[in-house]
Length: 169
Image (tube, rainbow, N blue to C red):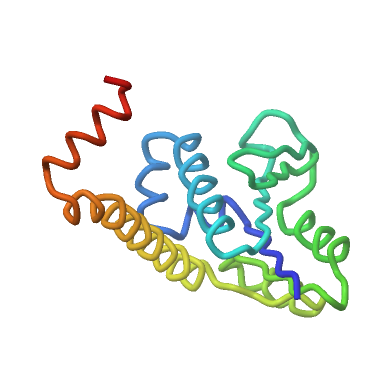
């Protein structure tokens, strides 16, 4: 079954401590960090991620674009992120699709639940993202260990011979 995650961008930025800290210096940097983390989460989990931002804080009202392979929506003038999220839930709704909405806005959680989507609190999503980051780090370490492993098996002399062959000497 296909899974979709719709993220209320500014709600998550305001809730996650590290993004809240970054936001104090630069809202743009906080958005970029959220998008980077969502891209890693999407790539590792296979869940398609959409991030919604209120356009009154960003240029380009009513647009959607892809950045970091995550689809980003900016609301239109006089449209809230909650309204756009509700529209997306209806748009993506399908019997072979699970839709999750990540927000800590209690009213929004109740509305999207009534539309057939499942809620995911900001804290739950943060826990999943941190778990994903740990798994990615562990996988990278395993890959690096495997790459180094053949050198230990053959020894330094053989490694030098292989390096000469690689360089064509």
